[in-house]
Image (cartoon, rainbow, N blue to C red):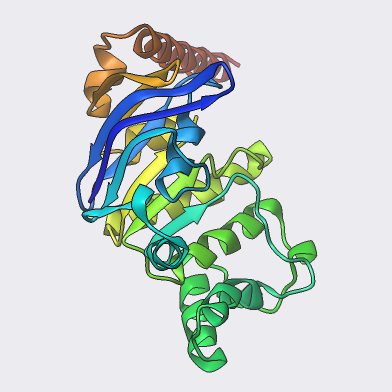
Length: 257
């Protein structure tokens, strides 16, 4: 479904992505993780050319994204859902109008766009808030509207760029639940950039770890987080063990009390 070959992106003297290769199979959920600044978001943004790569190729279902003209790129972007860190909703529009907007601009009738928008909002549990404007919604609800906006195009590939990064920790879970449901039903191939270890353990078919613009380790969660071979993998293993030990001590303390 997705095949990235020798991808390179520089910002001045900084090499953000360094000769990266990655293939994602149809229906697969792949999670990209790594320290901040390792090139995760740059990698995912080059796929639909929100950022133009300097070298390499990006094939989506056999189509070379880097060679497309503006018309071809607009067509392919309809097949690729993208969920941003920021919600990017239009405040004067209702939830359903925000989801409809791209469909109408793409040439669909308002009636057809409305039906698809409601169906997408239903998938993320937001149908009862369809007439609410962003200011009337929590951060988690706004991000779910953003997810519905991407789903309305019925994409074959879903790209998630740290979708919980802008949320209060109390609101993260409601977005992760939606992502888990979508991954379970495999309506689309999913490539997810996230720091959420629990989500990666529960949902990912494969974990890809990056450091300094390149992939340093990849494999199933049980391999990468239990028997890592990279420095980054070892750091994640230590973090998971620390979190488990902290939880165990907390539960033990509560029982003692």
